[in-house]
Length: 202
Image (cartoon, rainbow, N blue to C red; front, side, top):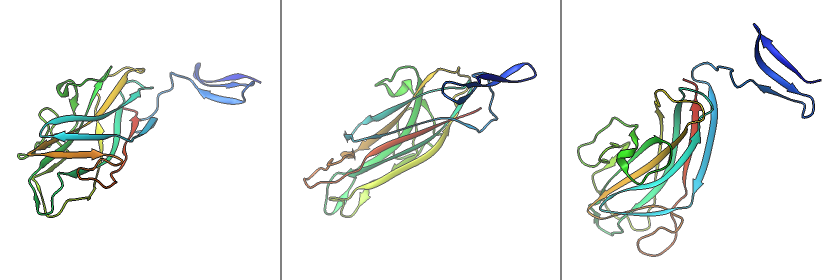
């Protein structure tokens, strides 16, 4: 039969006889570090970053707890400008977050990384990866990028939508991100871009 489990007069969980499932009460507080929610998505996108800073993609997560933080895993890949000798394309990668709707403006996002490399970075988001050119043959070569980090969201309410975005920059030429088939000189290749975001109890 259906019923409610209480501790100290406060509801902890309820049982639904119709579905035979037990559901935790929405007021249940989990210990800090507990995973509350996970979202994941793969993107078959191709972005040509040409001597500029540009957003690659966004992934949204709706918080189920108050004052949560995020653990973020990001993966993608890139090809620099094709060459058989030397590529002087400096490039950098960064992640950022904002509440509410997505934006095309980098400064609307809060920086996650504190590293601010001298050579190449994003204007307001710093960088988690930075390269001062690439030497040697780069034609048809796809390089993988991955990063795992925490975002401290501060004071946020349950039900808040948080958008996490990936950004890239290139100087002195092109940075071809993702794929499949995002190649500068024919052929085929590239890779999927992916976000996995964990909501962690604060």
